[in-house]
Length: 388
Ligand code: PLP
Image (cartoon, rainbow, N blue to C red):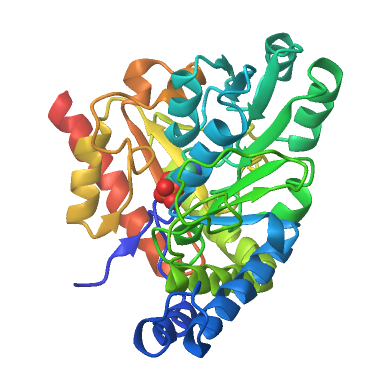
């Protein structure tokens, strides 16, 4: 494949070479089932336990509080169905949650709380949605489309006042590459992460379930993961997740600073060279020469809406120019419906139809930004000429 500017890291980011290497041993040499009694099984078990220790530290949890599972989606479903369904209590979530939280919440008749124009959770609306019947509140740490970060500490304060017995779940899937989840998710009882968003393999997720939280498993069988998620563990995947977590934490400060600068150059460059662009999740510059305030977003996120443009057509021209991006989240991309995230933020439907998510990651480079700045303004101009 010829070189492309890959700006879709929020959908999935490449595996670190060290992660591939760490996993290899569990495809080739140590292939035993880790629940077995012999030496190779014990080696596999030790490797998953080591990964559990690493992940626990990275998430501010105890090793026994980590439940490995098959994806971020499964971790979210396990949190909602496992901790709330059947309890008789209600579930409350934010309107801009990932479908992995929104759909389960809707399925059990939960309550959905709105956001403001900047994508920030409306804490007054949250307070109004809470009462003694609420069993679980699920609010994401960072949004997968806009990158906006929510203040869990403040959510926990609102819960302490209005629903003191409710559990707090956070979907930290998009937060982990950028934020100190161990510190920020400390008030949460349940925390979801997914390996392929931070340099690990696809198809491996984890849910932190604090010791005090009763959990009904979604999958029953051999009783693996301390009876909380049956099924033979994905040893190589779990080893890869542990290795990726270790690298992410060790390099996070450098990556955030470097990628944040790249993102700012990209967003500022597109705003300067294209008319009729709305950047989501930012506060307007306080005056001429003052930078746009992107402090509410994670460092890798650049999310823009282009007036008078259909994002599907823009993505097509971008790809032809070697720039890979997406319209909304990976799951919604390609769908006809404008994003539920932008709808919740009050964006006009026609503006939301021109949304573009350019998401950067640890491997992003100046060349990726150069390519996007060369290709996208010309593509927008071409589409607007064609529509005129
Ligand atoms: N939650 C968020 C915020 C996500 O961005 C994603 C994936 O895009 C998921 C959950 C689902 O994770 P997975 O792809 O591992 O199922």
